Amino acid sequence: MRDAVLWRKQSHIIMMLAEALKVDAEQALDLFYSTKTYQQLSDPKYGLQLMSDQYIVDNVLMEFRQK
Image (cartoon, rainbow, N blue to C red; front, side, top):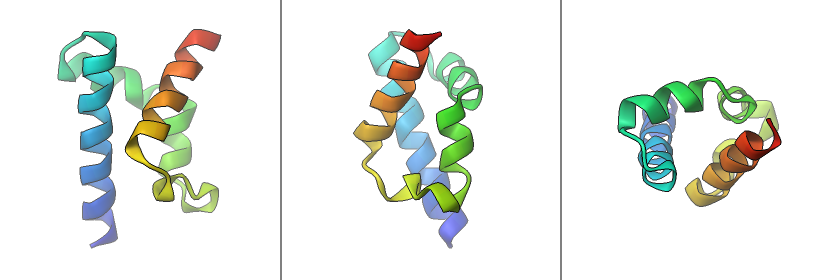
């Protein structure tokens, strides 16, 4: 069940990211999977799963700005 909840959370984050970047969902998915934030979200030791979707999107956008 926890995997299903995380999958839905990631889906929502990807759709929010697509909207913020004005790209389609497939591009947003590729971009999201290439981030450190995604790696941390996938690892429970960081606790990122407990943060809001908007917080995570903001982290991803900040990560893009720093590149």
